[in-house]
Image (cartoon, rainbow, N blue to C red; front, top):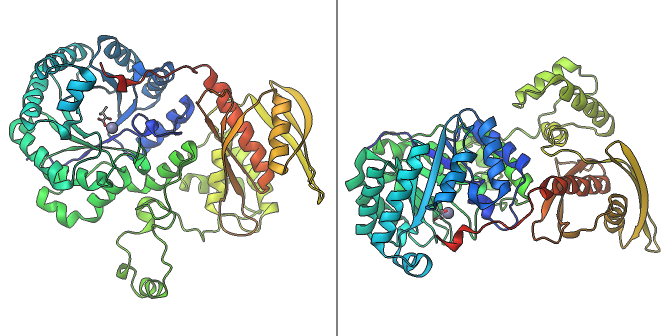
Amino acid sequence: MQNNKIIIFDTTLRDGEQSPGASMNIEEKVAVALQLERLGVDVIEAGFAASSEGDFESISQISKQVKTSTICSLSRCVESDILRAKDSLQYAKKSRIHLFLATSPIHMEYKLKKKPNEVLELAIRSITMAKEFCDDIQFSCEDACRSDIGFLKEISLGAIEAGAKTLNMPDTVGYRLPHEIGNIIEELYKVVQDRAILSVHCHNDLGQAVSNSIYGIMKGARQVECTINGLGERAGNCALEEVVMILKTRKDIFTQYGGLDTNIHTKEIYRTSNLVSDITGIRPQPNKAIVGKNAFSHESGIHQDGILKHRETYEIMTPSDIGIMNNENLVLGKHSGRAAFKDKIEQLGYQLESSMLNQIFEKFKILCDQKKVVYDEDLLALISEQNSYIPQVFTLESIQCSTSSNGSHVAALSVKRDNELFNDCALGNGSVDSILRAIERVCNIGGKLLDYKVESVTRGKDAMANVMVKVDFAESGSPVIGHGKDLDTLHATAKAYINALNSFERMKKFLGPKNSYKQGV
Ligand code: KIV
Ligand code: ZN
């Protein structure tokens, strides 16, 4: 059997981004990639270079900034795709080209319109070409789990011969059950042995993605492809946090398989999950394993009583294992000095430049005057607001809203663009409507609001509001997400809309149809 390290291959930025409405801009992708690196992910699939200018640019930026994880680009078995992948990865300290080609009878006949021998020949030719530019080549048999096992063995051996180091076997349509994935990997392991790493990539259409991946591991796979929060097309992909916590929590089982382990720093899981859900606007369901809001809360009296008597009566993991802080942690008070504040920020895992630290400290002081209790989450909210990933073309300078019982709502605001101040006001059918209309007048743009959500950052009547908006400004079908946090929900709404507008300004450069790789080769 191969070694006992399970390689974590994260595809949140590629397969995860194919989730409807989960598209991210370049700065957001860089922020996620840097957090994935902090989490200890071995391979980050940063995108599909040939699919769009935006994907190419984000792979390139991520390659420049990430130092320890391998950066990977997806590529069809097409010469021009391979060249784009190579160019996008030129700055990566460690790079990987991920080639894929369908191998199931249904995909070969109807999508590719190729015979198995043509598919084999194309795979070998493409791997040989990619190998000239990059030593680390991964080959995926798309729809592997509905492919003929004899053909999978033949193409795997050909791929190894041509230079592939990792062979990935996706359950592209999420059709298989755990023992079936186990059998496929077991059969392949007999011929591949340790000449290449076998990898699993499971979709969740029947809710089996995590179990399927675990069975694959038990039968010899040493790489798991997964996404944060299980993000992905349709029912999503295998959730990184679940696989990692299964391996950690059930060490007793995995000692039989050589004591399997990952490089993941589990205390970074919660923060990574929050970052991805903040950016995409897609929150995991409350009862989602590991990162759902209720994953560690015990409502029933019997459970609470048991936990108080002996934690392990009802808890198999602790919230702190995945980096959830104690909500009751009162951070600092209004009399706390800069040094204590800096110390606290460092404890939360941030190393900020002094100008950024000072700006957040000023906001913290204001917050202390407005709010009775300041929690760690409040500090994180201030940091995330200040640490915006996107250039601030528009900034909200001031806002005034008034409503009256006769149903009239008016908002007046000032917005700065390139150091010039613009003022305007608007009437609306409700406060939110009047604010958004006023922003659109002042910024001279129209947008369609697709989604609007408010949640509180912490508990308490005086908690900050976190507003998320999803807006389609160009009617282009490429909506952007914006976030705003403030003690006042309406002010948070205005900030969120302006934030979405800034995202849109950034995205305009790369607007254009994405090439769909699902067209086949
Ligand atoms: O699900 C799939 O088959 C894929 C491949 C492109 C690896 O995502
Ligand atoms: Zn996939």
